[in-house]
Length: 229
Length: 228
Image: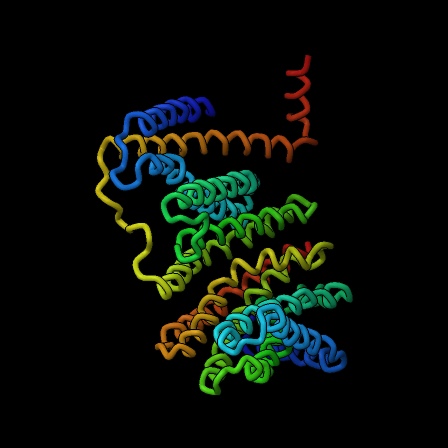
């Protein structure tokens, strides 16, 4: 395995470019989780009732839970098509280090499911009567949180690739690990809405994203090798 | 090896249970209800320790490829889940008369213990979903290690989260200085539970190893020689 930096970068960018192209040709892959996100968010007002105070109060929590579930929904297919058509085997035997390719896949997942969620969240937030200043913080927490979720989720997706009952299992594996992101993400937005300080929550989300970034690609690579023995 | 764990374990638990339930004086605030700590505290501590044992042996198995370490991890998981459940159940039974509620989301330890239970479930579910033993070992080992990195973070974040909408926790951190008549039975129970846990673990590991090696000659010979 040669590990010179330009080749690594080229391999990573190659994975990202190819998957973005694939996603572009099949827009459903990007749009379905987005619709899911909007629908789940719409379920809550229907269940709770239209009272503005309640919506304002539960808005951050609902948006965060919906985003978490939407991320999980798209994770299942992260390695599935590669596994089915053999590209995954090619990645495993490629001279480019596997963690770099795994990182590429995680970045791709974030670009196609995390980033769109961040961009569409203000529209949904308006229906929850969230003020503009709070919405800004919602977007920042979602931005940092979805990075962690994509990276953590890649580990779970790599562990369950090729298993028949993968979807439910994936949620079972990832949800407990995703708890800190949810806690800090949703609570920070609630704190902004209540007019409290938020720096601690943002620092934590940022630190957590960096921590996960440092170990998730290696864990994903190890899991991919194990799953494809 | 197992009797070395069972005998002191049973002895200590018997002493702890007797002294804790009959000898120790009543708590001046909680009455007799506090006596559930003699089951609760050992379970809670073992639920954490079992996860550490599981993750450590999973890591050893993954790095040095020792099959026995994987068997230990596999055998430890259900015990750990059971202790976690026991800690939650006894805590909840204690909470009903003390806090007036079965469940209190505001208490950080309750919530992080629940997440612990979910982690055990995820680990066992992943192991159950993979038919090939060697693959199940390695996959679940990766999960156990990722989980081990996360456990302190989860614990910390749950604590931060609950400290927001509630002042000091309901249970005091240091606790009141405990009378020795209460303390010794508790220590005995903790030690006794640990011994019994060791016995249980060894027995489960033995069963696990026998099951894994069921196609080898030495297992066949052992079973045949013992058969009537």
